[in-house]
Length: 426
Image 1 (tube, rainbow, N blue to C red):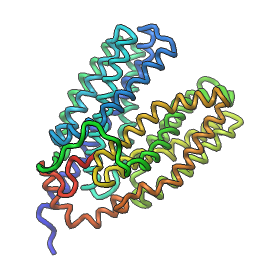
Image 2: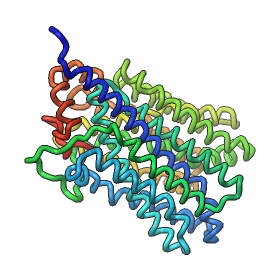
Image 3: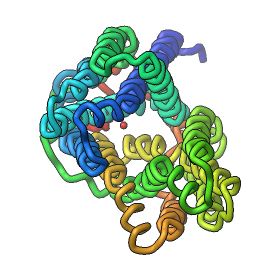
Image 4: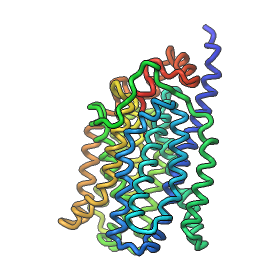
């Protein structure tokens, strides 16, 4: 039987969509990387104590957690492409705001706004990633999150240059916001314009995550706990527990971030071959091994090795949690927003949890808790398979008959026959 005449066009459209959503993830990461490099400037400029700075930095996740449920309603009303374009532009433009704060109170308020735009853009772009993955027929979410890490590295690299040149943070972040915002329309040109069916009910402004998202969120929570604990505490751990120098302690954070980014960039190849459940279980075992090495490390070398293994092991878990939520239940948009909320909230409390446990007991005990969370993640990883088998590659075979029809309708604004925009997510 000759191929469907629309198939080559659909494949070309899907390739453009994948390229566009890759650019969206990289831009989102570049904003994060740019902002992180100017946190010390803001602290010095406002003469903040460590406690005051820590309080201020708790507000972006709060803004994100509150605003993320709104993203589904925005996508339902305006369509996927317009939602991603508008929310990503808001996130890029908001980068300029925190450096303008004249006081701690104003900084906290502006960081709430920054977090809200970040969270809504996060949900919308992950929704688009799940749509593109579904049409592409194989896993791409891990690579997209890897490109987010690459964008964050590039944004931070430019920030380091700005700091070295003694450029005022207000000027640096304003210029970065303008440049990144100007790139948004270019990055979004090829996105799929998925829309809700006309008769579909709009999602609620706020809603609890559906039951299908709870266990998926628990998997993501375990991974985020390990990720944030390692990113924020690895240097302190190596310095205070293993006696590492400041330079070696800083290198541990670099090792963790590099292995996580590399793991995400190559993760899709592993996922396509072994499926999400096996991949997460194998990665979880690697992360648990890394956690054990961290806990028992007598010196810096073994500790750095442990943190690097944790980075590799946890690299693909959060992307797969978003993808699984996008395939779950009857309302994937709520499911992905729920998973995003759980992960953001865990990221908020993880550094504090490590500090509290370390104060009450020791930092070795803190990372014992992180290692135990890795074991739990391995045990419940089966929920990432989902009711449809969970592997995009497998879905490619079963969805081939309907994929051509849905691809054409989605890209023309008609929505998926069985998956309206209200079911999407990040």
